[in-house]
Image (cartoon, rainbow, N blue to C red; front, side, top):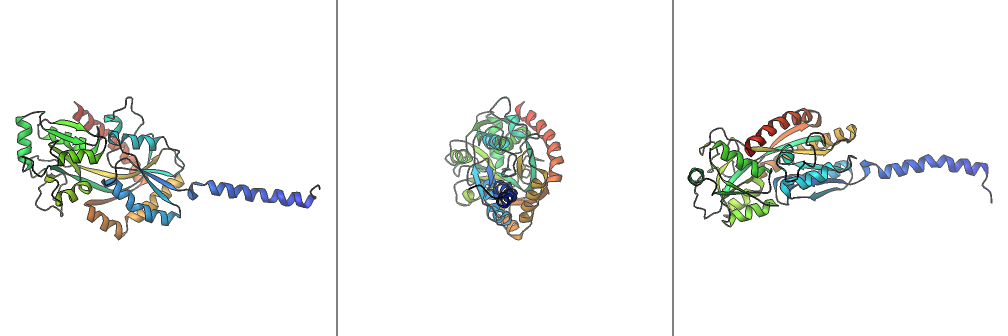
Length: 323
């Protein structure tokens, strides 16, 4: 039976509503958000990412999923994020300065541009490091380790989770500033880099507070020094590197949420605001205190210009370390 004119008009009138319903079901605001962690579970950026999962999910009304993508000093995770659709549903929390990955990366040519391929979303904290050795290491303090590196150039070893990682940079700058020399041994993951130090197969490593404090307090590692400007409350007897004989040394990493370049500005600014609202809570401040992190908040608009300045600075650091 042919449809009546009224039935046809009624059907046409319903089409925009149906179409808008489909659009809503596919809208970025209704789909899960994926946060890529370019490191293994148990690291500082993994812990911070997982802190944000529940409150961000509640605020946005969608699931938030963590995807650990470690390997090659973080390069694999960054590369995956850079190639993701800029639809507002993929973020990455960076720990190693983003600018270092292409400079030190194991792939040539670099698989992405640190500035052009990413959009800054929000900075939430900074993290410093501890220089650690095995509990039965012959090096009982930082002075003895430095003396050994001077006496046996290139024989003392240090581990990291890959070329260009924060651990690699921290140790490389340490040897440069102390006018010593040590051999770098890169691993695929942080856990492996720390395990071989704890087992005495590698002389030392420079790792974040999140990953080292429990092991130090549990007797599986011994801390020689911390890289912050002040001593850690959790390890009050451990000196800073500056106190231990390397004047002016200080090292930390910023924890920044980033997105693939091209995300709609309104979506980016919304996510920036939501993340920073969570970062301003007492719960996050307490979390940072427990994890020995320093809250350091910056929105997307302020973080962008700093990225450009930092890119130039880290290029100079990379050239110094590689020379």
